[in-house]
Amino acid sequence: AASARGRGFGDGMRVAGLAVRPQWRLRVGWQIDEGYAAALALLDTADRPSGVVCANDRVAAGVLLAAARLGIAVPEELSVVGYDDQDQMAAHLVPALTTVALPHHAMGAAAVRLLLDAAEAGGEVDTAWALRLPCPVVERDSVRPPSSP
Image (cartoon, rainbow, N blue to C red):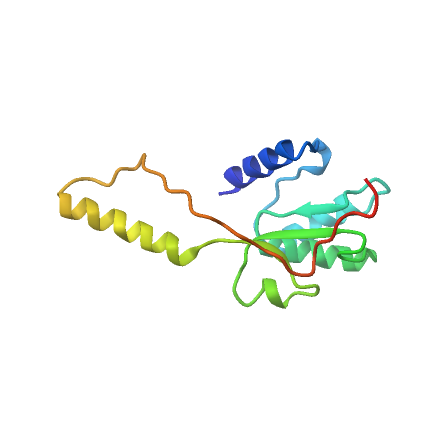
């Protein structure tokens, strides 16, 4: 998932006509402490980004903690976006986290349909088959437009 999410981020930035600074594109683990450590290094500089898009909500929680430790106001000075809309987490962070929601129910239903169809046909599951489901952005309080370009 990390590679696909990274490609999607890069594609989105290109479509928007925005450059991605290689030194700001970090690959870290999936946990809060890894997001925290990476964000401390990224944000504790004079030349820091105005926004951070994280591969999951746990990493985003680490970014929020690092921003608080460094005295960086979210979203006034830094926008933070997560991914997963993790239950019992994203909506309860301070500020509440803007995130990309995964359609877990629809994903499970599609997987079951695929298995049942293969079983009924007496064949194998077509591993090349792919279904793209909408993943809506859940807008909360951790994002706002930058004050200057």
